[in-house]
Length: 176
Image (cartoon, rainbow, N blue to C red; front, side, top):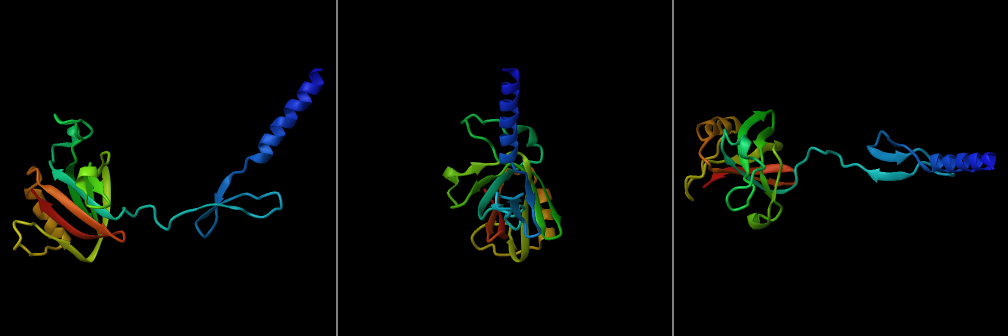
């Protein structure tokens, strides 16, 4: 009886091992299983070209350089604050550290709040960097000038608003 149980157990284990396949990635960025029963590779899941692209929509967070400890802690109204405590430029990327609110439809009432992280926004020559002092203010700054100017406002509580379309930042501005 022990031999039969042992043989059955080994058979079940063998079937389980045959049914499991490891995933590999080929040169085209597609995950494939090893092989199916006919010896052909099966496509399991396609990967996107870049996992670093931020979703299109609007992002915002209030400027508080010393606000990192408040991220993730509900305020007196039960809301999670969106706090930006650092901004920097690296090449064509605006890197914003902190918690930001995100809305795909510009509806901030139904937005999502991120964890404390580095948000990387790609920009190009068409991206507008503005300090909005009123509707007539249309002066556009370079990315470097803008981040340098944010240093003077790092504890202002003003909202840094970033709009992204087709994976590229189109507008960066401040709002009350």
